[in-house]
Picture 1 (tube, rainbow, N blue to C red):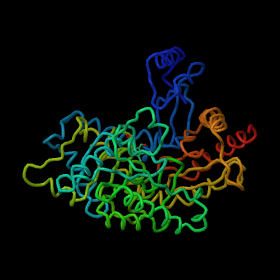
Picture 2 (picture 1 turned 180 degrees about the vertical axis):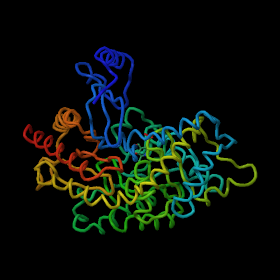
Picture 3 (picture 1 turned 120 degrees about the horizontal axis):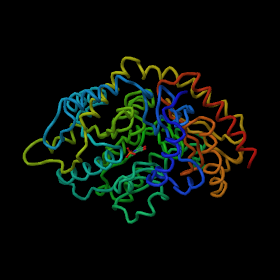
Length: 462
Ligand SMILES: Cc1ncc(COP(=O)(O)O)c(C=O)c1O
């Protein structure tokens, strides 16, 4: 594969990256003796580094590139919009692409989620949903409601409000004290279900949902504003909801007047074979937060879809939602999102995922013959592979082993072998896969073969 980067360019990029870049969630020291990986271009399901080496993008960048890379029609839609109107704020103005996109998203979203509040990212979307819940309850005369319930190990973003909702102790601790009100409940990791609920998924689901009710009662229902849940929880390695879980959660939220926020920053836009993950599992949220796949990453955009009911107190008199950011609903991002959705329609990407997901699962499940693979779980084009030390007992790795295995071996070896994916130990160690929605059997096979080779070598080193 040709590359415009000669040896001098490559050396300069390395030197400048090491001198000036500060990469996110990255131990910068790990590049002291090695190269910073530099990805220079993408095409379809693959990305290429500065040497021209090809990688299968098994994570869609970061759960983003639904339609794959290098789509000129989407890029050109952004360029046309930049020439016509590059920027105007959504602070008391609107512009045509934001209007068209809001109307289109309202048509795709479940039930009465007809109001779109745009942001630029997922963290801002989550932050906005919490702020809206708080202000909404103040406006309707329930000012004591400010708390938010979310699940253990769940990731909901990094800004301080979103971080307070996030359930990962390790990434919160340096920033304590966080905004008050974050309350944690168990997630839906059936593989690690407590023994009294381990025999049957429906029993486990009922227990996990009822834990939300117990938390609401413990905190005082009059103080709880919202429950934030992903359709399939990413962090921890793809925990799908057990049967009946969301039905029971909806019932609990209705009983106590608590808002149900479906955080679909990953699970929307085809990741689970539907425009919204809540549609796959048949529940009606009060708010959906989204980002990532709405543009497939051709420009940044996020937002929340809000029920007409929540908008109602803000629709008359002097009331307004006192929140906004400069680049929310950027015209270029909205034009790109519309072109992205055109690709979804033209290529029936939802149908493609629904038709392909069984084959994706079956291909990954071949890996369960390896002693290190405890479980393969997920839905749609979104899978986690849990790694264990002992399959029979499900014993996991201790911190030192995890460090050696994931950071020391798996992450670099998988990348070296040509697969972008994520070896994550924020819960029990897992490998996460979330490829472009255009992937077919040849890509599933490529992922399986690379994983088989690298996991086999990992096991041999243990
Ligand atoms: C469920 C969920 N919510 C929120 C976020 C935060 O999104 P962003 O990184 O765009 O701020 C993420 C990011 O991965 C996410 O997965």
